[in-house]
Length: 151
Image 1 (cartoon, rainbow, N blue to C red):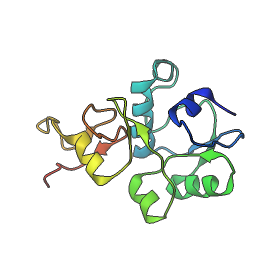
Image 2 (image 1 turned 90 degrees about the vertical axis):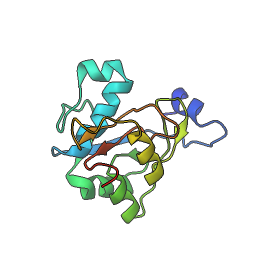
Image 3 (image 1 turned 135 degrees about the vertical axis):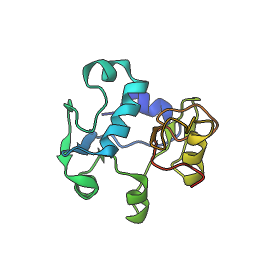
């Protein structure tokens, strides 16, 4: 509650004085892999204690099954936060947040910013690339690309 780090990232924004309820996947998923991969890249403690994977030993949180389960919990629990894939959030009119990019700037999840994360990637290795926390102007930091961007 009243986290100083969150307040510092949101100057001038009136934040609610309430606990944050974490909602995460109860089942294994590619979405969890991408999210935990990002967390492992930006937080050494997360990387060493929990790591990245489609399933991890979550230190906290209420588990929802699939995007539907997470969305249902987040919509019902005051002060909750969770993660779903962008297409699902957009399709279901869910609120989403800006994140701080690898360049230290706040960015929004948009198709253009997903493409910015894919710029300069060596596609000769694979068309499925973990593009979490890529440097680049307006690069969205939580991104997995399944297809060649020109396809």
